[in-house]
Image (tube, rainbow, N blue to C red; front, top):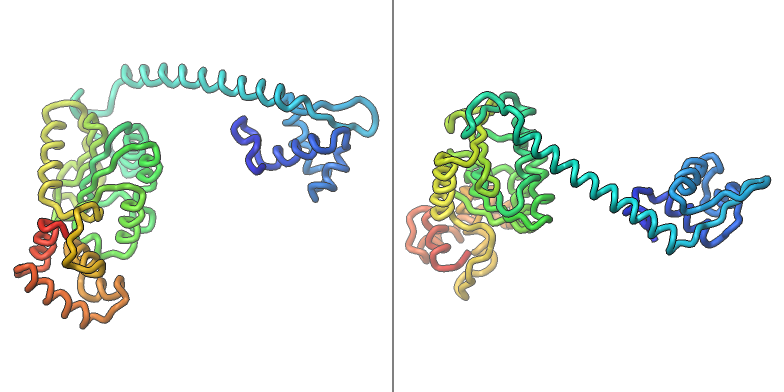
Amino acid sequence: MEGLLEPVGLDDVDGAVYLQVVTCPRATATELAARLHLTPARLRKPLGRLVDAGLITRLTGSPTRYIPAPPEVAIDALATRREEALRTLRIQARGLAQQMEGAPRGRGSDMIEIVDGEQAIVDHVVAIQLAAREEVLIVDCPPYLYDGATGNPQETQTMRRGVCYRAVYHAPRLEEPDRVRDLRVNIASGEQARVLPSVQMKMLIADRQTAVIPISFQAVQLHSVILVHPSPLLDALVIAFESLWDRAIPLDGNQPEDTGPTDADREMLTMLAAGMKDRTVARALGITERSVTRRVSHLLRTLGAETRFQAALQASKRGWL
């Protein structure tokens, strides 16, 4: 019963001690400690927490012995108190949200505000994603907020709540192994991903209500960003994203399959769409670089394409990806 009391704010040690008291009523702290292979001193705080929670009771006398309260009554009462505390927290959260709406924003207007400083930018991007309820749209291109090793840690957490993510990737960035690994994790978690040979309109849009864009799409570092609130500018950004999305090559594997290409062909075409070099593709597929070159030539002829990106585009139109 690991994690038995976690829903009511007690840890695994508390739960283990509680189970021992239930199975061995009237036991002393020394006896309980021996059963749990712990020292009596280690049990002092867990026993205190269980008494405070009303789950167990100290008997008078020496040495002190412990008996459990009726579990169905004690746990139900504890769960009810926790539910009341959560309801109070929700009410307070709504009040804080109203205060935030009425609080003065950063420098800017009601339509936009400027956020300065790397940490402040990260904090806003995290908060916007965690507040999303339906959809997050991303154009992932330089300059980057996260390094390849950490990726976007909020994305998987947000998708677990049922929020849809659609992302358009800048192909050269997918040459980096960390980025490819991160992309695969995101797709496996439910992200709809597409790629363009080159894209510069970096943005993140949540629920079509808030957007984050750089001060300049040509910027090489993110020292400041613009938060865009509901406005014609935000509408234009959504239209721009949808235009990029329509032009991009799908990477999520949800297109209808054709009997022509093999699974290896489809994976190779996806990598070609990402602009990966032969050496990277060979390493990813576990084959030689010469085999990659030979197979790419065959795919180009089959698809009537002159370039690798054209081959990926034709493959997408045929439903191969």
